[in-house]
Image 1 (tube, rainbow, N blue to C red):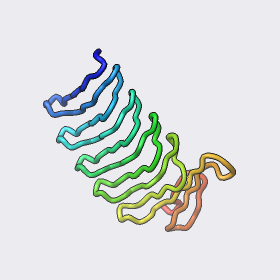
Image 2: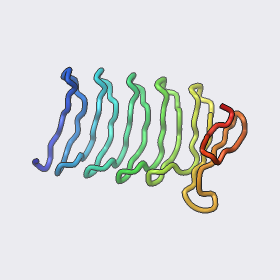
Image 3: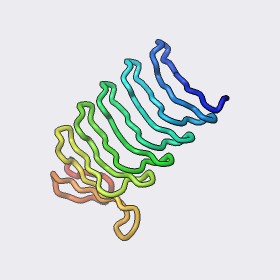
Image 4: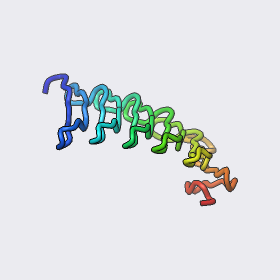
Length: 147
């Protein structure tokens, strides 16, 4: 294989499914995947075969589904997840591929459903959930206790 190749993959219908560039047999640069209706499904950035940079995924209707950042193949930084109607569903932060710090989960009306705090080290290492509706805490990972 030559050092640099740009690849297009198609659905059986002939519609573009994916496109990506390869360098030395590894994905390198921007890669895109599409729904058969032509809507963008995913857009990601690779460096030498690893996710490295922004990643965005979209619902079938074109609305943003999630946005996150990768560093050397691991999620690293802010993450936002959305409902198909565009309403924010989750806001969190990752370090080295693991959730870290405060995460907020929302219902479809935009109300805070669950708060989670994840600490990786120290005396508070682990995950703590808090439900603002029933005002209870949980260490079990079950999240909201009033559902």
